[in-house]
Each structure stands twice: as structure tokens, then as C-alpha cells.
Length: 551
Image (cartoon, rainbow, N blue to C red; front, top):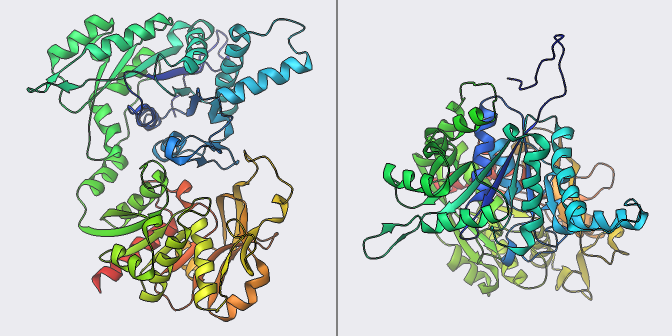
């Protein structure tokens, strides 16, 4: 790997000079800063640099754990149990790294730390202010990540849109980073929208100009503009943007809508984005290694097979609520050279098994998604019953596993009104119950069973077949678990407990004996899937779905 570490006059090495890339966004929210950051991170890693990814989120919540998926999309969980923004999932999938809680910085966490320091007297009686105390805390997190990961480059995305009042301390902090780290070691990348309006679909650059003006008002002059557009930007338009925004013409990067987000790194490479960054930061020039990524995109764009999977959840109105599940199914499609089409089904609208059959009919597999609360769980149970009875390949995740247990208890074991105490505290058969260590927990934020935990897989089971090993680790996010008091009864009826925590004896994986592919897990396999390494449970589902479809 090329090293940007400078040499001293005596031939030894001095401290590594970390470079910093800051990605901001303007004009509208959800403009694609996360994919831009993840794609650039991938390109820089392709060139041999060690990249640390960071999300600076201006919202006042301490983390994403208590946020409604309708408002904020998926809560992504890291190995060390941090509940974070969904963009960290993009970072992990694109750059192929495992992030930690250091990679997520929010206003809530920053102000919490500042207040703790003030209470301890760390500020020696001084008046605590946004500048320098809050901005210093933000900068310490940015610099600290570079040190702890020994990164060549820290790539930090600032959430929200330039002009948001919550984001001002973060913008001020990254403005100061140029002075702290040195002008040649910091680059500002601004993502903007180039709309096409009017009857002739005229491409308009004015929104970008105004967004850059707003950024300049807080003291940041962008070095690179990434222009989201549905239409090509010609040379004349690029030169106009460059002139009015005071950037070089080759620093106006076209980010046209693509067939798949995984194509974006290749589009950026062709636009010379990574060449520009390497040159501007004075990094060693290396050849980009893109062959593996090109193969991934080729398999996505030109598959030889096609399969449809039903995805039953309760937050489907927001496409980002289950983004990692959707991506993981796509990864399994890449592995099996298949286009995976998703049929999103609102569990609240499923009223019976017959209704579930009517909505799922034509699909070759079923995923029942995670979630919280009572709304829609009977619909999930009906969908599970249809899959179990019809032989439809099935994967249940977290709450999806719990619904599979309840369905089996009710309809196979005859435990009428079996349920989870999360939604039915007085159920006569609490086959899903609150974890013992959760009994005295009152705070909702960051108190669940979170992060990476071990699991022992039983040889000879479906789980062992798909994983190919007996020892696995997976990420968790839940408060309720399978009630071991019912384990023997359900096992005698044909439910297999094929994955168990080796020390705590917690049920992690269940499956139904004799079914072609019926498996469910308490953990979240979607958080560990990669485009070139589909997670075994999703890979197994798509393999079974293709077989089911062929029959």
C-alpha cells in the first residue's frame, strides 16, 4: 500500500500526515452525500489508501436508536453496538470496512461530552461556548478517528443541508480543520442538485450557485462540486458552474442517475474524481484497481436469471427503513447471477393466511422484517404461516424470527394465544419474553442487546449448511428473546434450534425440519453483507428461491 508518510532528513519517518476530506450537501436533503462519500472511499481504497469513514450528524439525538424509521430510515448497528445512521451501512458495504461508534458523531453526543467536561471542571471555570468548546470537541473526534484507525485519509460526511441551523457548529469545525491540519491536507467536496425544469427540460445551474454562496457565508470555499443530475452536463455548463462557483472546471464532477448505486464509483472514476483528490492532497499516484468492482456491476446490470422476493414489514412506506435488507438480497442476487425484484408488502394490510397468499403469490421467497410494537404483527404471523405450510423459502429477521416462533407455537403446538410479552403482557403462553438483563432497564436509548455476539451452529442443520461452520458472530439489536421454557415442547413438534449463544444459551437461529428453506434468526445478518460476499442466510434464500421457481 502506498504511504503518504513523510520522510525526515535523517532517513527516518515523522508522524503520519493524515488527509481530511469533508463532504457537504446543498439545495435539497437526501441528495446523495452518503453514496458520494462511500463511492469516493471505495475509489481511494482501490488505490491502496487506508480510509476511515465518519458521519457528522447535526441532529440533537445522541444516536439513531430512538428514531422512528419513517423519519430517519434504518438504524444501522456496528460491531461494537453503536446505533447509527444508515449511511454507515453504505460506508461498510462500499469500502468493505467494519466501523465502530467512533464513526458516528452527533450533536447530542458532542454536547453531552462538553457538558460532562464542564461538570468535572475541565474548562477551569471558563464560559463554555460553541466556539471553541463545541467545535473543539467535534475536531477531536475527527482527528481521533484518524489516529485510532491509523488512516491515511479521514473522509467525513456532514449530514443535513448547508443552511440548517443544527449544522453550523459542524461546518465551523470543519472550516477550522484547514488551519489545524494545513491547507494542502484538507479538501471540501460539496454535493448539489442540477435540476432540469420547464417544457424543454433546461438544465439549471442557479441552485448550485446559491448553495455554494451559502457555504461561503460560513467560511468554506468548496474545492470540488459533485453535481447530481438526471441529464448530462455539457462542457459549457461545467465551465459556467466553475466560473460562478470559483472552482476549476475539472473539479465539477457529474453524478448522473445510474441503474444501480454500485455503478457510481465507476462513474466517478471515469470523471477523474479520485485522480483529482489524490493530486490535490499530494498523495502518491497509483493505478486504480477496479476490476472486481466492474465485475460486480456487470453481474448487477446483466444477470442471466430473475427472481421475485416478497418482503413483509411495517415501515415499507420509507424505502430506507429496510435498506440493508434490500441491499443484502441484491448481494445474494449478484452471487447467483440473478436480478432480485422485491415486492414490498405492508404487514398491517395482511388480514389472514388467505390474504397473505394472495399478496405473496408469484414470489419465490419471503423475508419477514424486524420491527417494534404491536402494529402489523398478526400480518407477519399470517405471512409466516403461509410460507411454512406452502414450502415457500422463508427468512425471518429479529422480530421476524419471533413471529415465526409464535406462529409455530399456535398452529403446530396448539398453544392458543401464544404471543410475545412485548405486545401481549398477559399472554398465557409467552414464547417470546423480555430478556432477564432488560427487566430493570428504563431508558430506551442504547440499552438493548446491541452489537456482535457469538453463536454456535449445530452440525447437520440448515444453518450449518449455509454457514459452513459451527462458530459465527452476528450483530444484534433487540430486548426480547425466545423463552427457553418452551424449548422442549417446540423441539418435539419439529422446530429446530440450530444456533445458540454458547454461554448464555440464548436461541439465535431456528428452522423447521423438512421444509426446503425455513430459517429465522434473532440477529441482523443484513448488517454484515457485502456486494462481493453475500451473507450466507440471504445467499441461501436466493438459492432456494431459484430452485422453488424452477419447480
